[in-house]
Figure 1 (cartoon, helix red, strand yellow):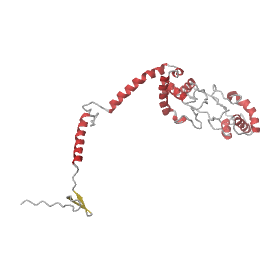
Figure 2 (tube, helix red, strand yellow):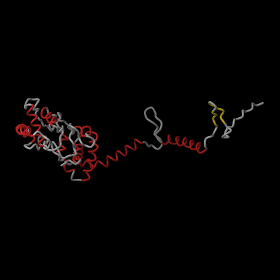
Figure 3 (tube, rainbow, N blue to C red):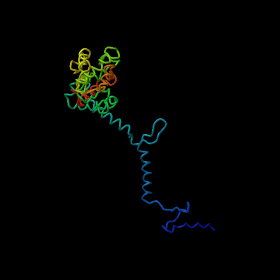
Length: 293
């Protein structure tokens, strides 16, 4: 006689058969999956098989299956990149063949150049000048109208191309300030007095007696570069000392430190690294920040 199948236990509360599995008195119900869920699951299997046939899917030794449709996201990107390059080529050529000042005269090309310059700035310039070009202690703010070497788009282009004190460029911007204290050109007291005078001409609190003595020292040692009234000289890269914009600090101690042993910043000559077309775009962008002249 055939063995009798064991009877399935039915849960008294739910009325559903159990699987016969039990853990710590908890019995597992043999609840079937909903039909809609099963059919959806079967459909995804069929769809995945079709996808693997239609599109690149399986890796091979040196490549992969191509799929009967011949599509790939890389190919789509390559086509989009080629189309973008073709669309940009006209403006790129116009920038390359134009003087940087004349780019500003064409609004369409100027907008294109500024957009390209903004991208270049984020890659090459934010490390020193900040993401908003606001600068920091020792690094110039590019949003204001105070420029060491001039703020016209041509001036900015020259500074970007040749850099400042860049040893590898014969046309780099160069300015030298004597180390009046370190090289014993002025005494400690004279440096203190001239620092008080500089604070006076910039409209800050000062020691009037010391500033009076410092005026003579300034005229004899500093006015040749910074001007009689401390207005600066862009041809020499000498900053204005008569406003509220300070690269290395405006306190008496900071001015004393600068006169004693000056900090003189450097900037790479970007022309050789980026090429003239990119330098023109950067110049247009920096000029557009608000401080360009």
